[in-house]
Length: 308
Length: 182
Image (tube, rainbow over all chains, first blue to last red):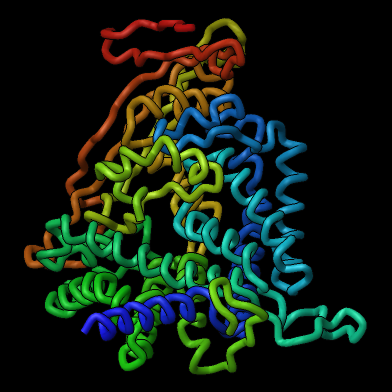
């Protein structure tokens, strides 16, 4: 009996080792890189025309008070945001260049680190204008900096001399891959659990309150008041999806269903509220869950704890 | 896992160790998308009070200009300019201290010839779905004022100083005075 128990533990640790350090789909990771890099590049290209209002010398938040709008719990130990408008323009240009390089797959790890640096610099500069896509992208850029994210679908592969040899992959890449998957589950779980504290989500009226907020929606959706049961059902579906996704997505039988429902949810948000960039930021992770199914896995060059 | 639940005992115990790193990378955030409930819409109207000389330059006239912020969104599917301004308003507009320290001085800076600015932050109460008959016309909805105040602009002090911060108090029906705190 003891041997059986020890055998179970051994299997469990072998599973953990395979999960954290085993082969993963580098093609899926490269697609994720393109989606995130491209998404942010377009978002910040649009933002580039509004730098004066957002980060300029006479912005709502002056340079000297950038960190003051953050509560103590959120303050960084030191800041590295641009301190005058010339630096703002320079930093923003470098940010866009690094995102473009990342999207094209040129020295993916390096440019992910560079993009993360400038990305966080602007978060520190004016936190008041930050929204969901930018906050979530901090995580994605960090994990991309750890991963071999430009093995496939890279401009470098078009040049024979620069094309990288071998199938690639290492335990750090797998860890980053898993951390991205776990992070999206944490995001959905927390936002779903928080919704359970809200009366409007229990009564099914939360979606109506969003649709009735003209500031957030792209059209007047108030005609949907004729379908209260539909609205309430969609409200409850949102909570159920966010709470159960973190668990069900790990089971092959439910994975595809979860992803289809997630695409439906975020596409609805894009269509109703115009939050295109946020939707792409969240949906891009789904490709990592489909990596095993759609693409061949890498052959990792070594496992952290044991040989592959 | 820890930081989205900032009130948890584990977070409070570990925060001195982990928070500096998390805040450095921008990881410290709570995940509350429309949670626990959707926030109401927030609108801001402001009036610029300025003295202008009339054509004969013999008399000054008090001129009031009414504006809204942000300007109403046009027909575009997505407007980054509008959304950023809206988030700026929402970040500051529910918090009186932020209005006082950041928002109001900003409007003084962009309207340097204004003597004082009257702000009104308000929201519309969206009716319950069952009690609603017609399409929403926002101007007909019940308007609820969150903050209303007069802010005295002082050009020299409205720029943030490196030596210290100037705290403004609102001249709200004569109850508050201007204070400089170092």
